[in-house]
Length: 160
Image 1 (cartoon, rainbow, N blue to C red):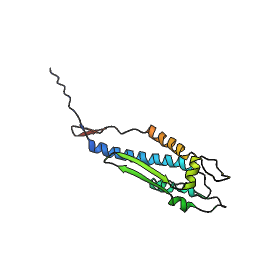
Image 2 (cartoon, rainbow, N blue to C red):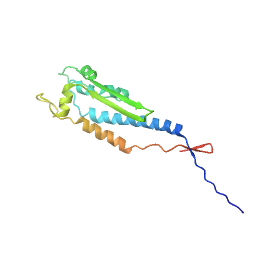
Image 3 (cartoon, one colour):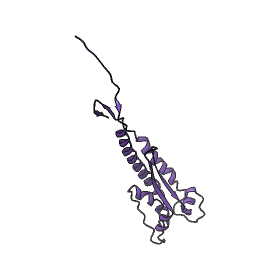
Image 4 (tube, rainbow, N blue to C red):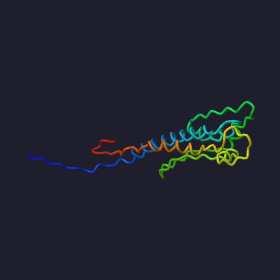
């Protein structure tokens, strides 16, 4: 009686792994952007709607809805906020970079976030700290994430 054992190195299926990784990182990017938007934008109070509207560009890119109803006695400045806020998803598959960017030039939001506003009688005390709240939410998504397993091919069969 004879027994022969043999091990053979499997082939890594990098194409399938990269496709799966791209899908999972894109989903993670969207999930983390939504968490960031939800935590950050809701720390910003609404009076005229300008400040919270700065988040709308990024929100539209991840299909997230932000409620903005100006106070009835305030002017409606949602279009001002929208024009002074930008957001985009940054995906570079070749370099493996997945991220998002939010930016604003709305003076009173920046001043209120930093706690340096000279506006009297603010409804909500400053600083708003929306960046810190948003970062904590983003970190919670990132902490629970994991990379997909390797995709291995051996004798024509795919194992994950």
